[in-house]
Length: 265
Image (cartoon, rainbow, N blue to C red; front, side):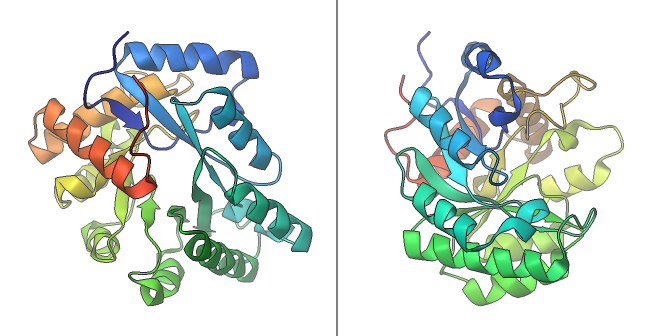
């Protein structure tokens, strides 16, 4: 199947949470839906090397981000830092992520989360890589960490759920905002309001697979092919034609992650 000039990209999908034999068929379903590629972020030590292996196994379809999720930041000792640093230089790695703060579950102490975020942002700066950021109930601290790094670190705040003012703050730093399947949820008027406040060129679309399956797939395991439903909802809120949003998100993704020759047709 020929990939159109501006395909959809799923900018965030945890394909390491699929069984290995399920990844290939999921990618084929994505291609049939018009989704040419997927960024797969790591969450911690258990899948740090696995995301790199997926990118190597599926060149032209998968790129990887490596990092320690806020839930796992208590594990970020000297040995883990060396693993992350080593992974950041491997082929197929285009970002540091998924990193950030999460105060909902507090699986790691606040101090560990902030220290890990600051170290990984500095790693991204030194490696010349963008970041994939996670934020849940932690905006004030996240902003305090990001604001001094304006113009130094680029990236995307994935599955963003803060308000229009916070979104403007993020885009004011030159970063992008990732929108997930929550934009399709019946009670997610706040997400739709957020989308309407954004400039179209500052948006990426994602599934966050296997979580947050969009309508009409709610209750199912999410997968990259379903990013098309996310994109359709975003296009409606931005009053754009789908093809226009397709090219905007495609070019924004490639500009941020430096994948000028990816994905391949």
